[in-house]
Amino acid sequence: MFNQDFIMRQIQQLAQVLAQVLVQKRLDRGREAQDALERGVEAALGLSLDDLHQLGRPTLLAMCEPGEVLYGDTAASAADLLAEDASAAGRQRALWLYEHAIAHGLAVPFDVHDRMDAIQASLTS
Image (cartoon, rainbow, N blue to C red; front, side, top):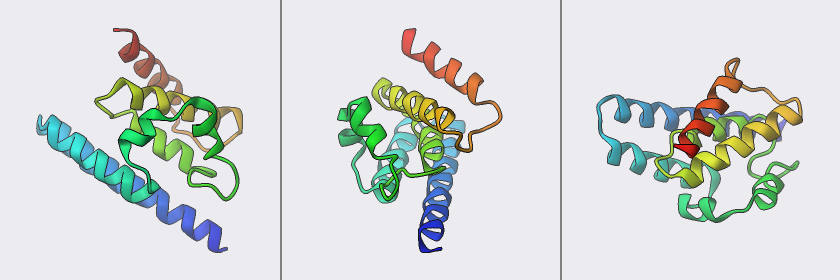
């Protein structure tokens, strides 16, 4: 029960950060959006955005194991947030997290494939 409560709080926290980032982007405040993303990632995941950008795929996905910081549906919530990162490194990690969530039957947004396509396009342009 405690684990589920923790995961739900973490997902809620990630969703709140995502809302802040999206509001700043709509207001065309890119720097403020990135600042909100950086603060939110650190608060929710206990890891700086720069450190997250340095993680390789195996290390990032190891964080999705039971008892780790991105366990369960938190992986897709973190991917939603990282998809908004101004850095290609963050968007690449969002793609990895979405792929992991799909492969493990976790909850993902209904338009996850469209989101993944958009991320992939942003990485190749």
